Image (cartoon, rainbow, N blue to C red; front, top):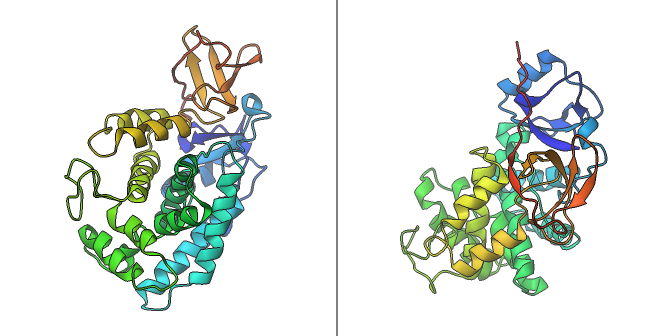
Length: 332
């Protein structure tokens, strides 16, 4: 299995590996079938930009670093329900959120690394909530590596899930951090730490962030964790950039947006190349990333010409030069 852009899809050589869902969480297209060009055009019209596919070169790649789609979709549904409840001035479904927090903490805890499902692989109406779920998964991965307690991980997860809850309460996007904080700090079952994650996720250590222009030492560490995850996820899903390019950008923000230690940890703990990525090595041979074991930045690869698989961690002279994009299919 591998992830491709919808324009790369070839109905002669590929079939869906994971279902495609509409805004009501119904299956639009089931896994295990080819996509007719007519349906492909409809997906493009819906702005669905990524597909999980199976083809001959991705055989045996499981992408275990990604949360399974049903769990991900259930999390999105819980977030959607929560945002709608707040917008309608109804009670926050706190019990469902607490269960979701436990589920996501457990999901991250059983994986060596976390690779995200792009929000642009589902209907546009669900992407705001998918973004929050993805930010939470990344925040938990970093929080776990920081060595924080289980209770703190749950507080971090709740804050990350609800970091944009203010957008359900105000149309002024620039105010959503303060509005969200003021709401969350009054919810008895939500810790003040979680509320501060929502408050400070757009603050930067150089004092140029929002809403207060706080500087290093004034911003809670968990808000910084959520902030770097938020930036990464937005660039991955909204901007459509590949993970290694997003990582290069984040490294330029060391010492300005985020602390040097946090950027260093993020770079170490988030894979630059996810399984299923086609790459060109410095020996000018094409390969596909097959799995991540041990060193997250030196994955296993399989040569496309011979099928030989090897670990880049054990072949230190081999380097990934660039990603290889499949030839774009003409769609009528």
